[in-house]
Length: 330
Length: 293
Image (tube, rainbow over all chains, first blue to last red; front, side, top):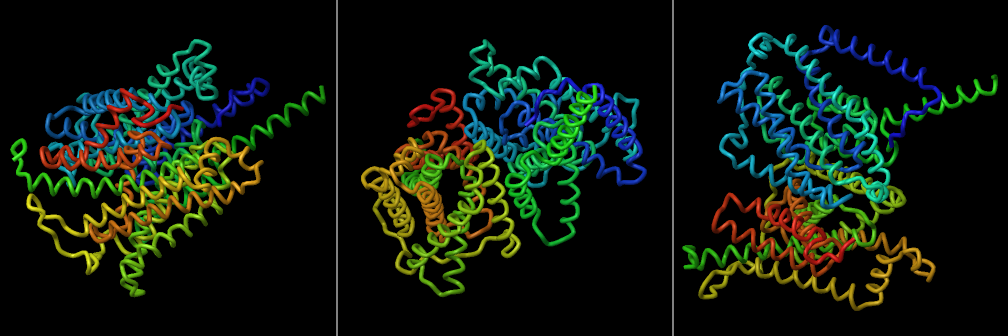
């Protein structure tokens, strides 16, 4: 799905990446002037969520079907901390992430005992268990959810009450999260992870404790997912059962798949696409599940590499043609 | 009184548990057979169950068919649909990573659910218990609703029949051979692609049959299969995929344990299957009846 960066056109690629990064940042900075900030913030939350799932799905090669537990679970904990315990925004986010990290560790330690589809089914079943637990826990208020969560200032200095200042706050947290993901992918740890994904038996025989690597990336992914869930509480000021339901886990896998599994920007683009179409469908009578189902079928049947994966493939071909031409000229 | 619970209450919950367990068994059996041969975790299984119930609902209310005719016709409809799906979509993914099959069937399940939701909403449609099976018998220690007894009996009969076919007929022998080494079987002149389509259709029919039997007790709703399928996944992990006995025994066991939990500590009932699954994964990762990978 994702291959190591090719050495020959490196500088060309690097400058392209830098230009892309600068362009994206500029776009994100001015976006609230043109688009509704709340929708943009939703996009950032789900973009981070999908990117975190991609860490496990694309780089770890494990289909995790239970990330709704971390997303919605962190949302519940943050909402409760902000509303009942009067936490400020910073500690509210932290406690949500801490919760997701711990549940991620617990789910991971059970699920990595099986591989492939067993892993998928186990994570799904465990997250369904968490769903029922949340449903019955009194602090979540079952079907009503935790409503009217306050938006306290961040560390008592940065006000988050109006949408615009909250947007820039969410943007900064989002960028930090994405930066963490970038670091993980491009670290020796990330390289080992790719090796394990490509051939686990071989990595094991080379002396890698593969389960430990898989568990670590699962926990990192859970923590970042929790961050996305906690952010969503600040934005929408509610935490509900939809965020912990298994359909949410499916939806986020679709976002990743649609954008491109194992590509850095793919999940973000997939999230934008899915949310935009959902927004559009909300005003029609067509159930969103129909769209999600069809999108899944199309993705799997027609473009398995996703949007970014397909574009990447095209560009790679272009680059390799360009560099081979240069060689001929020299 | 048993541990502070009246015998009548316990016994009727146990019957309900067996009733649920029979569905778990039927569904996980089909899931296991499909997985064994096609190497696909069939997420659409829950949707097949829903489709069976909806087919029965439409056949009785629109076409005027009897419940008994539905028991045959509705599973056949589901089987045909499953065969079309296998031929048209699933087949094209056989050479690829098995997880694409899982994602494809997940998409199909959502599509089926969404379409049913579009036409019938999320509310349940009522479905009458057939005339001949109304009423209850007094067994002395409990009241046994006839329909539940019938549902448990016929589901177990079907499980037994499936087991006999797979273990003792030449078709079953071919199935088992294909599970071991389908390429070799093809060399022997067996039409493996047809066998695959047939297996997927058969698994779908089992789920559809379960849907018809469930219709009179649970309401017929587009989401009835979606929640069931996850419990069935847990059953499959507990029993060990590919083991027929495992599917039947752990299906029934889970149904009963759920019922017992409902009697003694109601909030835990929904959690029971998953807690057991986690424990089994820890102690015996390949499942109670699994033969290892």
